[in-house]
Length: 155
Image 1 (cartoon, one colour):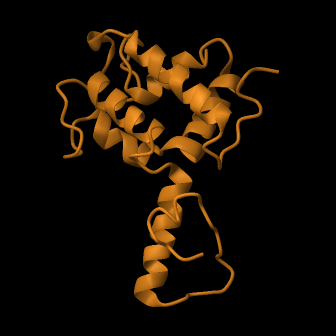
Image 2 (cartoon, rainbow, N blue to C red; image 1 turned 180 degrees about the vertical axis):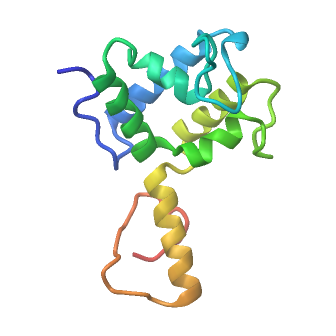
């Protein structure tokens, strides 16, 4: 059993913060020239985007199962490739730091400190906004996230 086996995909719990903090520390130890844009890893395998660094952090080259598990957890619990790639590549206007490394670390620190929404929080917000615009589409969707009260969103 590795340390990524029991990570919850729907909670900002102690394991979430511990794992995310360790990943941020790992990213801070990388060099700017270890980063790339437009691909996960370059052909030589010497440069990564955030997700390539996530794979390396998990030891994915030596343990593909651990790499896949941490990648799945990150996409489900933290943020998706759809949201992260533009940050990594400098195309998100909110994150315009000089390098992909600095942009990604800034984003992850914002997420860690609650200034960005996790994957599920973003889905919940999107569903709430859609319900608000289009009416109560169904009575089946009733998720109450911790940030509902902070944003004055009714349960």
